[in-house]
Amino acid sequence: AQSVTQLDSHVSVSEGTPVLLRCNYSSSYSPSLFWYVQHPNKGLQLLLKYTSAATLVKGINGFEAEFKKSETSFHLTKPSAHMSDAAEYFCVVSPSDSWGKFQFGAGTQVVVTP
Amino acid sequence: SAVISQKPSRDICQRGTSLTIQCQVDSQVTMMFWYRQQPGQSLTLIATANQGSEATYESGFVIDKFPISRPNLTFSTLTVSNMSPEDSSIYLCSVVWREVPYEQYFGPGTRLTVT
Image (cartoon, rainbow over all chains, first blue to last red):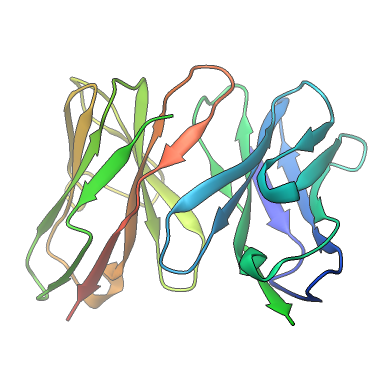
């Protein structure tokens, strides 16, 4: 069984300040983990992925995430928020024994204020 | 990466009718999936569309309500049958284009409103 919990439903940050989106997962097998972003009325875009290689993963638009097995976490960070980062972010887990079976977190809505 | 298109992009339908959504990919893909995103909610996997055989449905979804076809490696359809207002959602298809590492690409979605 697998599950993913996004600890914050809403995050509000000021432009230029760091962003932290928290994600914890549960998986019976070594999982693959992803972060996707969904801008209003737009499709889902893959930000980054972890697939048992380096635990610190760098993605697009300055985002990165660190896989911590001991904490079962995969938090997403960005050192300096931009107005264009305002969107919905989804943490996703896919176990290695169920190829393609994505389990989405509930999502975190990010608001960026000037 | 694959380019994925969906038709229609949005529709407003009457209760009790059915709508078929198409998903077209510009290259052959290994796996195709259908998701539902209810208003203000996250995505839920409906089924895996299997090429040449019956789709594999997730718990809570049944073939009579959501029949799926996948006649080849680049095309799939999802039908939402006997619609009710609770079916109002965004329906998305996704594909796995590379076997490793599990990258999944999503179509733009079909926004369905049932009145």
